[in-house]
Image 1 (cartoon, rainbow, N blue to C red):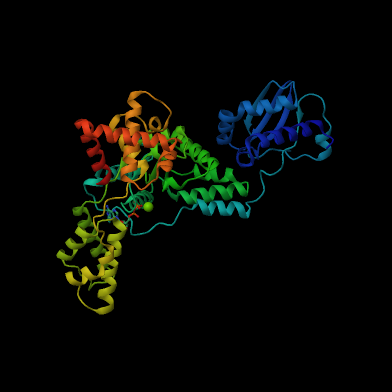
Image 2 (cartoon, rainbow, N blue to C red):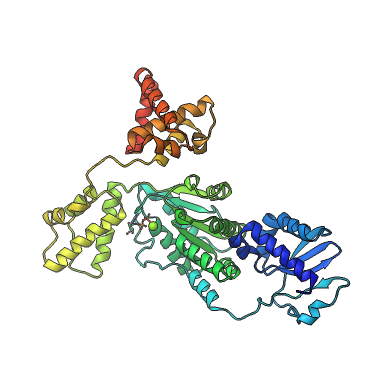
Length: 474
Ligand code: ADP
Ligand code: MG
């Protein structure tokens, strides 16, 4: 290439790409153009403000350093947003090869104004949101003790007007499997879109990832981001599945951009923000910065009400379907696991009564749902739960437990947690050691013996441990 500026620019790009990696490079820098170099100032442009702020806040120094490595006299970088139409942006090769004097303007790469590609169409499709189940509305959502707060927050968020101050952002709902997260999130989406004040977009984490990843591949990440920013309420389900550093970084920036712009973000996950282990601290603290609500297990009363609502809904299509209250009571009492099993139990009764023409009786219910009944086997306890519960009990953080700190206020809780991990789970000592910040199995063994020894003499500690066990197993 005969143009020395262009040549240097290529070198800078190569250097940058090597430093930040292909993913990040194509995500953030692929559409950065060199506009001019003027008296030690390099002028670069990007197509959106969003991109400008992102690069400026995170990569400004790195970009400058790359320039300085290639062209020593560069003093500063100026980043601008180029307008959609750049007259004469695409110059002929001949034009860009002269002009060694004064500000030396270069050609853009000419990609800004091409018609929408198939890749972008995919991105828009991805932005169309994940499919919604028409049955998952507020009308069919039963409110009980375990979900009152989550429901109230969801209602409030769904009905807020465009100009209203955003009360909690993000709204973060967490609960175990089958406890109504998706139901509540979809209810918000239906309701907000029906009211029509603010457009709500519901995305599973996979959809978000898929959209983003395919956008990266087709180099249309910006179109994706632009479109996302047209959303009034962004709803993301099952955030725990959002994996990969660059996806998470993208999510983080999307989150910040939306929140700063006063848009509502709603998230559901199977764990609290602090337990999203693969996410970095800043994201976790931002997620925890709005309202975090947990939905507890469905109590028997709530299960009964959910079943009742379901039967009524089913009767719209199957008028002859009837489930006597004692049968509902029986199912509510015995099928305890989660909302999905309740649904499964009713579906069986419905299928059975449709196929045989027999009315639903207690006897039939007992037979049909037998395998959905969970014996009250002790709950399987997870090491993360132990760490969380112990950390809360002793007022230390989970990362303290995993850290190498040796102060007494951390050492004892850590030993207790290891002891519980050994007694309540089937994990081996080396495995437990690994899960506690990569410790040796002998350290775990020492902790277990230590606590075993203490429990015999120290009534207070014995009681504490009993309480912890009960919390973990109930
Ligand atoms: P999650 O997303 O938390 O795993 P879902 O929202 O998919 O759980 O709920 C599982 C099933 O239980 C769905 O059929 C849902 O409608 C039902 N369900 C859960 N909680 C409620 C509730 N409070 N009211 C009505 N149905 C519920
Ligand atoms: Mg779900």
